[in-house]
Image (tube, rainbow, N blue to C red; front, side):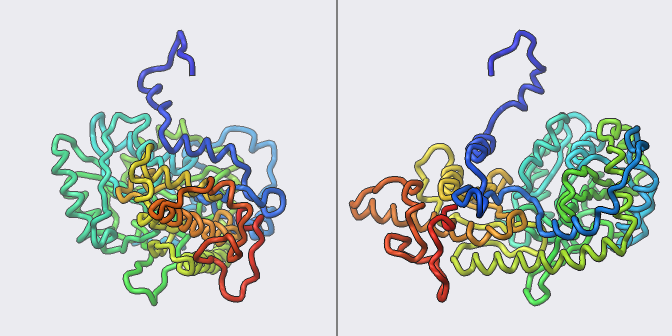
Length: 474
């Protein structure tokens, strides 16, 4: 970009810096997207937390909510209409099991959880104050918190914590981080529950302990619960914790809950989110900021109609949750079958897979080895979010979204297995002095799983017909 005679401010110019994530996304944009009919050789993109499991239900059951008049062309109320806030209060009371009923006047609506995250950082922190958040966490969180706020973000690694979703494991590392940054006044702890990208949940006891810990230090706790309805807790699995909302703990002035409809209901285009806070001063200040996050009247009216029909929402969840659990277990089975390590989850739209065992193939590479591995996966037809974008300090982990393109997820897992097998084969060839025989990119379309010239460790399952090459590479 050529310099301008009239440039933007220095602080805004800093946002133009392009890191490795931006460069990877540019690579992805240049590649055709996978489609079994029109682009069978395209890239399977499982990086974005998009939820396509209920498109048929939405088409069938929400068309009656879409009738509008000219009144919806005008301005709506700041912070959401009374109808919207009343409907949302009913939704929270029915599905979040709050310790005390949520009242409409304890709610504010905005145009997305991202907006609320940015607003809460501004409202709760003064210039130079700190915000603690656990890592790994979702890509862009640091940006969401700090891009317009002069605050200090303090990521807290949980990689080596034995119980990262329990207070006994979290509080010591939170305190250690605060001690290392004793010159920073910490004003806020931010959590994502269910967590992103790991899909773990915090228990009510843990949330209550963390809220009390924050209160003792004059800190607020803000919990993003955007995946609250996307849970698949398996009681048979030890160590799996079901979802509990922060609203389930006794009311505290320092507790604030964020929720939006983008993930559980795949309504990202509607741009409606909610702040639930029992602190009237915080709500009063946030309401002033809703000038900059005004809902469209169309969105306000549509979501009011949807959430006010609680039996309709219940029907959605009755259909959605079995589909989500099936998609998760189908993905887990494929990962097990193709021997790809991963973390068990109990919520969210994704699974955190662990390819650390193959990162050594890029140990001497530039840029970072994890970026090289991510590019290798792209060359083999799959794009996943790298763990380093989530602040993870164990290289080689990736977030795999299993709800974005469910039909292609298993195919993507096959290709991941093929890609890492290819790395091992290349390494053995170098050691044996055989050398390299061309790029994986040019050889893949000619391969058939389990056929001559294919992977040494076949990814074809017993009893399966050979997968045509165009389906394998797409």
